[in-house]
Structures are given as structure tokens and as C-alpha cells.
Image (tube, rainbow, N blue to C red; front, side):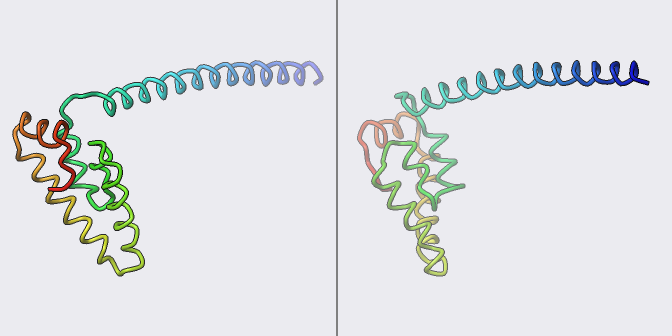
Length: 130
């Protein structure tokens, strides 16, 4: 009986060691994935590339939060839209509706402009509204 307990204890110990090793590998893989994602996200946000598609889609989907403004580097305007979106909780949705309509219109405008026109107007010319 004690030999069975020893074998069971050894099996449990081996299983725990294998689980710990697997957990370490998983943690390392997760750290690497997060690091890669952070590097790619930083590259996208810091790049001078045309952000038309990303800003347009985010303007349509999350326009009331002003995320498309942050993507284009308009932090002041993004904060204004974010505050209006959050204030919608207290104003029965009036301010968030206004913010959403602005985001929707801007998203559509971004997507209907040519790539060069968008780049010159919003990224080089820094036109913050419409």
C-alpha cells in the first residue's frame, strides 16, 4: 500500500512539474505575443502612413467615443467626443447621440475621400473637424 502511495506521489510530482513547465512556456509565449502586438500597435500609431481605413471604420463603429480622433492624433478633439459620449449616460443619450452622428459623418467622409486627399487633409493639414 505504501508503495502505491509513493508511486502516486511520484506521479503527482511529475504532473506538477510538467504543468509548471507548460505554464512557463505559455507565459513566455504570451509575453512574446503581447510584446509583438505592442510593437506593431506602436508602429501603426506612430507611422506616417495613411490611416484612412482604420480611422473611417472606427469613426463609423465607435464614433461616439472619438477613437478615430485619437488615431489621427487629434487628442483634444478626441477627448471632447469621449466626454460627450460618456455624458450621454446623464443626458438620456442626447450628447452621445450628437457625438455618434459626428463620428458617423466623419467616418463616411474619411472613407469616401481618395487616399491622397485624406492624407493631405487630415494627416498633413491636420483638419480636426469635418
